[in-house]
Amino acid sequence: MQRLAKIQEMLMQEPEDSFLNYALALEYAKTANLKKAIELIENVLKRDENYLGAYFQLGKFYEQIGDFQKAAIIYNKGILIAQKKKDNKTLSELSEALIMIED
Image 1: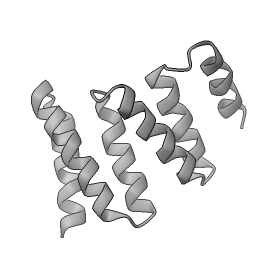
Image 2: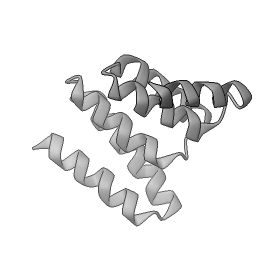
Image 3: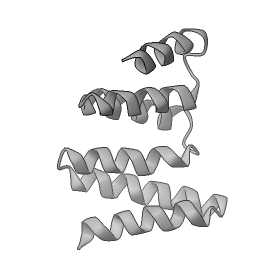
Image 4: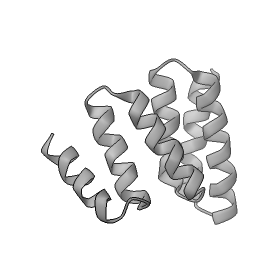
């Protein structure tokens, strides 16, 4: 809970910071508050669609709540961005995650 509070405190100074909002989402997920975690990462992607790490994590959160259709949509969006950015590592991770839910 200390990390959660610390990140929230830092966000008071920089509320639009993608990394801090992403980190806050991960902390909420650790407390089993996936609804809040999903909301935070969706907001990160609305502000910064190029934040590639968020696609993988958001897809995984959707998988955890059983919404495989939304997970696939998110993975596919991330794949397109990774292709544009020529980020082969993220492209591989997102493609593998998509394959795993399509089986």
